[in-house]
Amino acid sequence: MVCFVTSLLAMTARQTAIVTGAGKRVGACLAEALLGDGWNVVAHVHHADDDVPEGAIKVVADLADPNCADIIFEAADGVVTLLINNAARFAWDGFGEFNADEFDAHMAVNVRAPALLIDRLARAHEKGRDALVVNLLDSKLAAPNHDYLSYTLSKQALAGLTELAARALASQGIRVNGIAPGLMLRSNPKFVLRNHLGQQAIEASQQKDNSGVATLLALLESPFEEHPGADAYAGFPPDWASTIEISCSS
Image 1 (cartoon, rainbow, N blue to C red):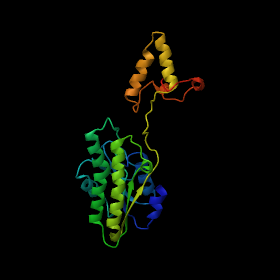
Image 2: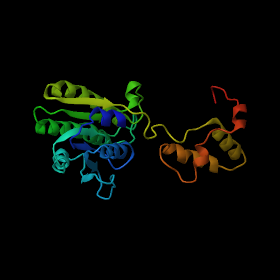
Image 3: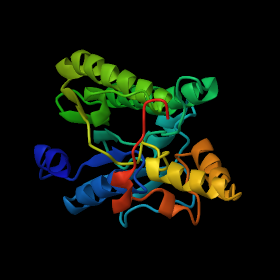
Image 4: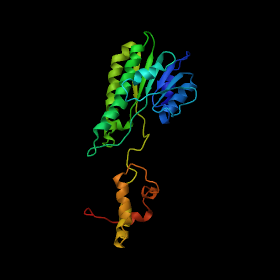
């Protein structure tokens, strides 16, 4: 992905790139690579105490703010010819737990903000120049599952925005592409009710010890969260677990 962005736009003149969510993970790596290739880099972060790669221009903005694009572009030193929409909200909800506030928040950060930034780039674009927009999608779009529902819907919308913007802006010399990286953050539960865990809890309860049942219930109420001291419940089953026999009525 880094090679795609840096080599595709390798140019002799020093140019300006904007990378949202540049404080960590993929965003930080992209910002560092661009700096190494001689770009001016505007590194967007959400919080004032977030770090950015050395040499980047740090700009703090809330992507849920409708004015975020103006705030970010005002920090740019020179004409922006590369925009990487990397930042994303990633919070749990799903069917049976759908959260309207989370849906709105995901759409604001993951779709509206990129749309505003692309529009701001297009309005400032100089005739005769080439420019590139790269939207970070998600590989789960090729085989969508229903966990993190609002996040998934927002990434599907971003994919649609990518195609529409590409069609609309090609004649102006602005290319719009999407990259769908693989797993960045865990989207499956850390804690699941494995057979051996249930068996251990049952056997303890038969001895009047219900602590195992209580622990499992607590973990399964928030299976995506970290629970200090509970890593043993998230590991692989022991060898003896393969001898457990259950029926469909179990």
